[in-house]
Image (cartoon, rainbow, N blue to C red; front, side, top):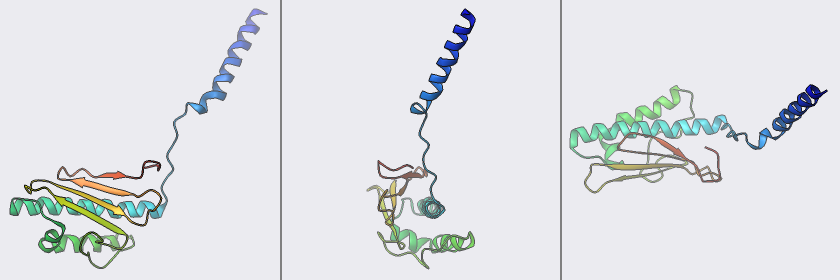
Length: 154
């Protein structure tokens, strides 16, 4: 009889824990839509191109460059980036880059070169993302980061 009470107690305890587990479970973030993933790939690819162009520019000139100087010094890199978008099946955002900040339709670029020319900071923001304000960032370290507004899943 006592064995049945102990077994029943353990079963009840396990059942109680199983029912209460969801409150302790980690929330999983929502999977971004295919269109959103494509837009993120556009941003990350462009930041990779900027990082590569900045390193090349610095090795030749001794300092990092502004957006306008990068475009003038390395047009093949940026034209190649736009051409690769088409090859990869991505929707090409434009035929060519414009002056900052509106460098491509729906993309806003802020590229700041440090006063001594030995560093830079880039913020590339998706102006179509009104809810979460997606942005991708990088600097002279070459590390690319992604961000969204505080109440949005990343």
